[in-house]
Length: 142
Image (cartoon, rainbow, N blue to C red; front, side, top):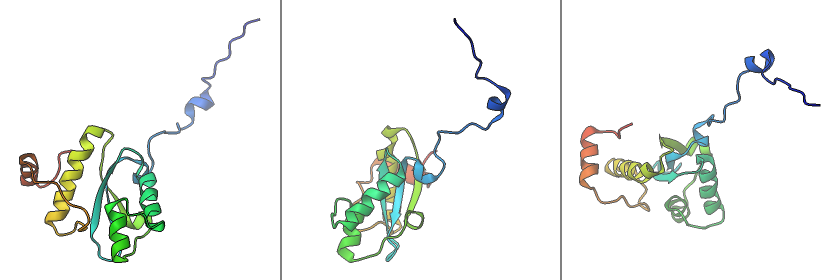
């Protein structure tokens, strides 16, 4: 015997859908900064994973004395403090387009370097004509 059952009931259709989209900035991917709690200088990073996962990686590098990132190197070499994700990590530019990660990262690194806020362990790229043009507009395109 073959039977048909309709799953589209009124109660099911009236329930709010559970979104699979990120709910916090830390669930997103893109360009981020990590601030040093001691000196307030910043590290700029990029990730195609969630910021939360990437923060945990930096935290592990520091806890296990493994200077694999410039941020961990800064904290370890200077004996500076780092804080919880809410205090130290900022989403600078969300993007799911991985081809834009490097240009955005270079832009934000140059911006912080010009402002004297980039940690010394991270070296900005050479100021290319495209970056020079971007600085004339004062902020990255959306």
